Length: 394
Ligand SMILES: *Cc1c(COP(=O)(O)O)cnc(C)c1O
Image 1 (cartoon, helix red, strand yellow):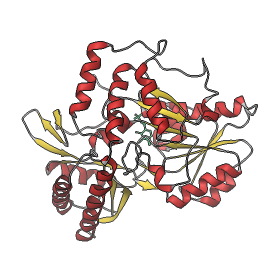
Image 2 (cartoon, rainbow, N blue to C red):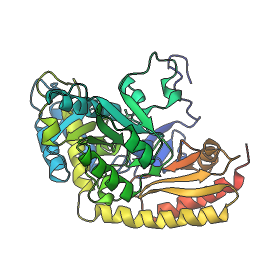
Image 3 (tube, protein in one colour):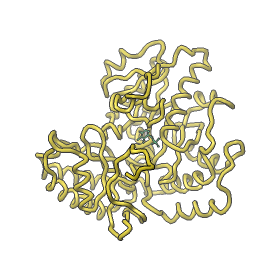
Image 4 (cartoon, rainbow, N blue to C red):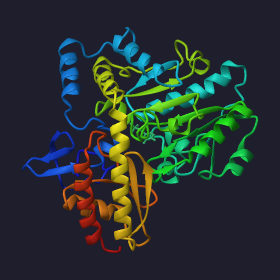
């Protein structure tokens, strides 16, 4: 990494200069199949013509006014989000961490406004990831991300992933909300079973707790439903953070809430200079219209079923190295057996011109553009087959 940058990442040698559909291109023309898409971001692939046109058209009209003036694109997009979800109100942000900050603040402010400022604690689960701001690392609770950044923030209680008894025992009079990713991404592509989500919703109702979903990674059609929690039926949240895929590659996110929660976020309680800026809204509206276009999500389900089956085949073919296939829709992971390293598999995949990612729990993560076809899935499986064959212990 060249000197002027903080070395917070360790990217590989390849430098990409162009993207087209599901492929990325190096300067010299080297072509790679992109099955990570900026970590579940480029939902429509790279340089989708409609998104490019929307961004160009808006760029020629108006870039920025800040939220001191109305941005019509915000109202248009917020209406669409509310039309198709539990939500009644939306706050736009630039990122997932900011969407989570808004979600956490909204939950605490709800109880404050109800005269219960003592109800501020938020329960989260091991393996959670909510972003890298101070609030988000404390909510996420990953010791690796917290170490060296001063005292832990008060008010977060973390319990074992999916342990319902521990969850029940952790609820007190001070608990404001339970917060979770319906399908954990960074934590290792680990879904909450649908029945567990419904049970947690019932628990929240019984104890008058708010339910916060972080669908930054699992949302925006990633699992074949617009929002991953829809698979569980009666398990709607009160507050939900979204980002990544909703902008299709333009940095944007949003915090969605019910009226009951959102109505307390009044003038002065929260803000953002850039959040929901006209460029982001131009792209966000086009991305959303595509995601909700007739047949789009059916395609995601179909191609995901095919790809998932192929990964099961790979697991059987490399059973000494692959422990299990995880995930849902087009957020999928291969958990490797002890002794084999996910990052090494990603390197071998790259050598075979396939881009994948790594997640926690030694999982190789795949989150291709939602517009992939069966042929791309087949090509990815061939490259993974070769990469797994080349993978050595260590
Ligand atoms: C990526 C991610 C975030 C943080 O989003 P940023 O845009 O990087 O701030 C939060 N929650 C989940 C589940 C994520 O996957």
